[in-house]
Image (cartoon, rainbow, N blue to C red; front, side, top):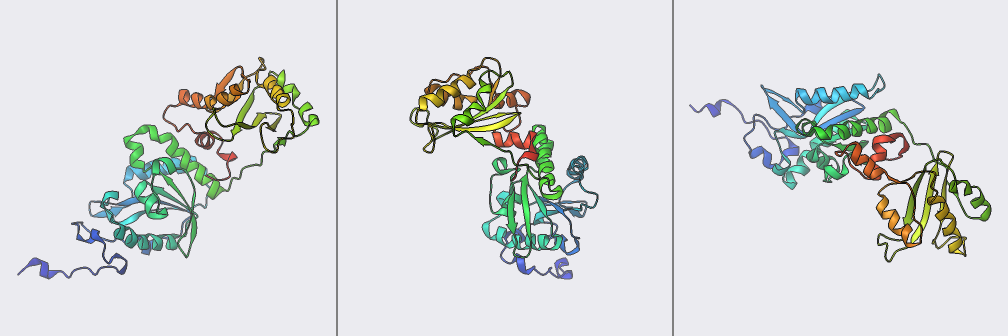
Length: 336
């Protein structure tokens, strides 16, 4: 007697027809955890299930402990519900294992999970989970961003983040991993919204009179430039923006809509402001702005660069302005 005859082959789920994972030797296939899941506000998705000691879990105990610690620190509302699942329903599946047909098949199980749980926010942990939810790739560059997703029955926000495993194996990822989670929870679950920052457009001599104090003030200012392109040899300085704790100002310089017929006049005013020896001028990636300013004879003094500051503070965090705003002023951004 063949032992295999004692058991009936488990029926293949209709979603799994043609999936190559069924041909792989696994302790089980197609773990339909969503059939017993309750509704939750937040859903963490791993890449695939971890099968250990006869049980399947989307995350191991260390991963859950890490995520729980961050959730506790996030000051979520007391009634906020959190759930955990896997984007791929077979255990121990890597991104390289998944063929296009496999992805299409298993996404039906994933949508069934989403429709059952009805989360407002889904964290896709790792590139495979990110690809399964959004059909996009590139977790390193897209982590922390928000993607609006519609299954056809339920709409939610997906935020890709590193997998907790990437934090355990590379501790430098911990800071941005935590911040990505906290930012998404604050925006999507708590509902923190950015305040609109008023900007005064300088379009007349009367407007200029209001900012001439910047040429002598000891108060630090933040400076940004807009240009017609990236090449300082061929492109032009379009607009300059100056921010202080007393107000924010935008000055059209070589802009097509500038009111200044005498461009030398307005450039001279900006020159006095940026060459004021009494204060600091804070740029981001200052070398870019300085090339364009030098081209028109403006040589800012006491220049500080937040990109360099960020590197000195923590060389492991991303250095783009958008990423630094997320880290230091997440309440000031409208969209993750």
